Length: 513
Image 1 (cartoon, rainbow, N blue to C red):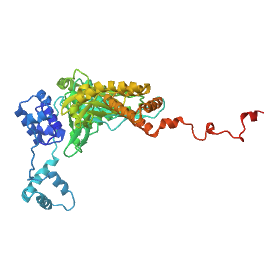
Image 2: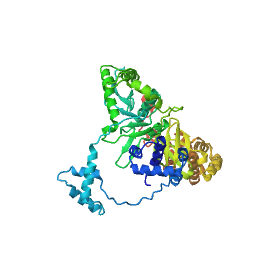
Image 3: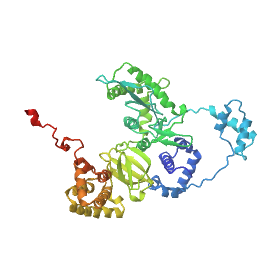
Image 4: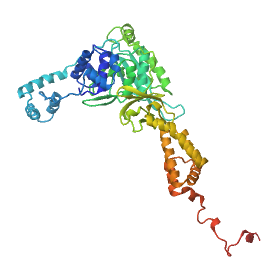
């Protein structure tokens, strides 16, 4: 099976999330084929594994358990891509016979012209079929941003900002949630979902969203890349994402209608209002939203609120006991040769066996977690400032531990024989640096410089460098090679101190007479 492991895991998660869901529906949510999903579900049922058992497996064990090794072989096509045929037929002077002949050149064993024409016409009939969508209670929540914005003025007379309007509509009851938010960024997008779930008292089984960047990173003909932070948030609430197809407005009909109604019921009525904060705008939006949800339907009995309370609230998924913590995901991050991973200018260790490999990184407000092949391999507190290196001893190889335990003491003992300036320089690298192993390497290189230039010269350079707060190895090497400290001690040429006495020069006493 050529499907990536992370998509296999998502298919299995969606299967256990709702076993009644069709393979085609699951396939549409991750942009693969129903055949692929059906094949994986058959393998899953044959394995007899539970969801928890599969979650505990790393990638290698997963492939072995489900038998999803890549054994693909080239398969001859016996029928063309009808969508391609349809697009080509829109071009001037196109005929089915010419297209069939061109296709047969690439697929000699394909169907004949008569069957080609018949099947194309049958396929074409399916294009104009419209399915009436019905939604089970708590099954789908349609979400989107409205096209209109809300002006937020600066009370001190500065420029105004235009806040975004988040709209969510439950498919069964049409209960609508509206919130004004500062931007369409991922954190604001996720926080709107959290606030919506809390306001409704539960979460739906599926969240249907448009292809905005906060939800979907990219979408191609063969692969869809979901925003990992958004996906992580929905997993916390035990719900799943169902992105709409591009240029398929019927997929998000509820959201489109909900946005229109929200703009007419709420935003239009705010057109002459002046707000000085997002919180102030939300207070009025909540009042108008409640009024809209309590307004009777035009073509049927009841209201959105009544339909929600009677048939949908109890069906919502219960909210988790623990609150969700916003996080950021980075996938396939390269581990350096020093078994550290860079994140925002700081470096965090992983077990040395993962050097040169790739890991996934999850970052919360206070922690950074690193995952290798589906398992968490390291967790660190976030660095308080850029440039820090955070290393756990259990991640080091034995040889590095021995170096860190024995060599610093030997280097400090040597520095004592050179002088106090050398001691101060090495003490910084061995005791004050956060990257201990690199500190030992620098101290070792400084000892080599002392052997090359002599202890006395090393002491002089250290005194000069410490006075100027210079401690890097490169800068110290430059001082040695250029004799910067000695040139700085010499008076500049042309100064009065270097002028010799001369009989034609008059002293101060001449002008005092």
